[in-house]
Length: 314
Image 1 (cartoon, rainbow, N blue to C red):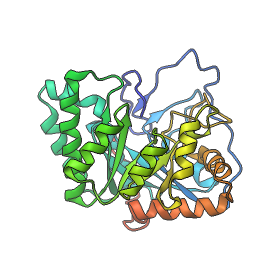
Image 2: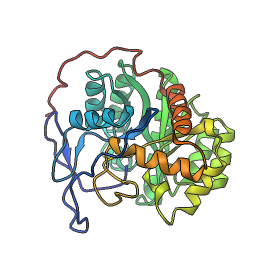
Image 3: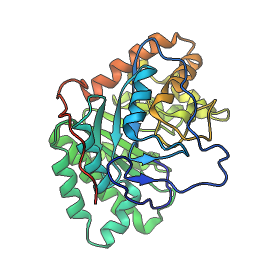
Image 4: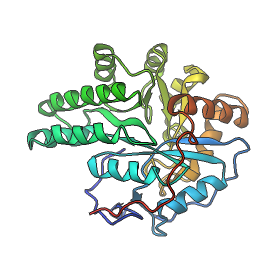
């Protein structure tokens, strides 16, 4: 998840709202794309963030996604509050699974304040709940964190890896300007059986290295961008059995709606762009990606949700 201003908590419909960005000219959600003939899943989204001037809540987002062939989403936490919300909300809706973690950019300050152990203990508890199928997003982000904060990020990353392995869950990795350090950590402590590089940002060499270990690469709307040659080369060399698709909504909307609020129902744009880059049929690619996603997280139907409203946040 890209960095942004500290948001406010707003209850169950949208516990966060992004501050307006004056550089974004159109803050309405884009129209629905043509529906996919074969359904896929959004590997990584943040539906706790209500974005856009038309303010769709998470239920409306999932309704739109269903209408265009997006069969389900992985709702991803970035701190204790959003991880609790993700787990509670996924427990109520069959279209959602949850991932729980403390984002690497949160860990240096949390460690300095003496709160990291309690936060990790809560992530460990949440990891044992029904419909929580991944630990993430965790990893390393050296873009905004200086040398002094790196040990805290690495220690938290290792702790999240241990939680994922203890609970038999997948791992969703956030990796920004830290490719080698992420790989080194995974090799040093041992990666979980199902490890995913969310919003993959590496090149072809990293794609080949990661997939040689059996790790998965999840491509977001960035792969559709005109100047994304490195990402497109990475996609080209990755085995089809190791690729996923995601939005990272509300960020990184794909071409042709780049710059507007992103949402799971926009996955078809990215899927079709990936199919074109790979010179393959979109339905065949969708079927492969759906199979890959279920191999990572299991079936969305395996643990029936309890149909009740998620708790309001305080």
